[in-house]
Length: 459
Image (tube, one colour):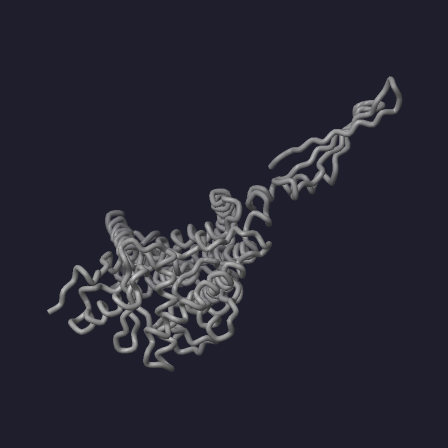
């Protein structure tokens, strides 16, 4: 916060003058409020602006909201944090119930329980969680940035499953180790996915290079939610002690609320980076109407759950990205397909840093090793054009290239315009926020080759 002092001089006579000094407080010149007025005539006096309560309240608020709030963060920050705090509160209340059940199953309070036995069981539980976190990072680490909304929701659902396993552990004493290890495994996925997606969302919220401030204030909010949740959890655990039906009713009710709050939280997010699904939504709407959707409109149409869960439900837009495979190995092509690649390279893609191959209704994208994020976006949109034209035409290569020549630059320009709330030129195409999914996906498929006609011979 800055404190700015302005002074006005009022001349009363040749021998006396009056000075007025105003004290202002705020994070920027457009977000200031007067805190005090100091006058020097006839005697020095200080008149504070606003009530003492308002001053104290602003100081307390500074510990929980980013500097310059709300102009320093995106509009979806506040609703997301409200729902995120509510879901965190329900989590900590349930944690007390699940921990109580877990300690009871280990044998705390029983004379027959041994220290070494309880220690060994706890060790196996933690070891399983550590190994699970490493495996989850290995298989899904590169997908967490691009699908932050989905993985944020999945992380909390896995946390629900982990606490459910802890609550079930006393009911299955013969399978206790298996049940608690399964719960620890679920929570390990939560730890990795939640931490990674939180970093991605913090970068999204930051409008003034204030990601560190946002992260610190989010920690303060979570601390308060933790303390309140633990206090309420202890009260609830005390009330429901020895009442299994009350424990299960409380746990399941809080779990339902937790899932609802998480769904509302990720539903508030309007991410401005492009991943595969958001690109497909933008492209298909543009191809049908000539207009580009805003990030808020796209956020209402994209999946927030894994597609295999929501595949049964009909969406507003039938997406084409399921017919596109981005980053295909050249070595996976057969003899005939390799010839088609060479023909395409010689006739259509001499200047582009990608090649497209149609195989059984699927468009495969082969990338140049020096391709940039813009090249990856162009290749993916081109593949979507081919997938769309396959339903209507047989000469998809020529027609798709013609569409790209005529409309691709228009599409990019309109996409940039749809992301400029104040008309500023900050969203130029060279700084267009592209989700790292494309690059990471190419890395995971180990495709860093480009085929040149002059250096590749096929018998």
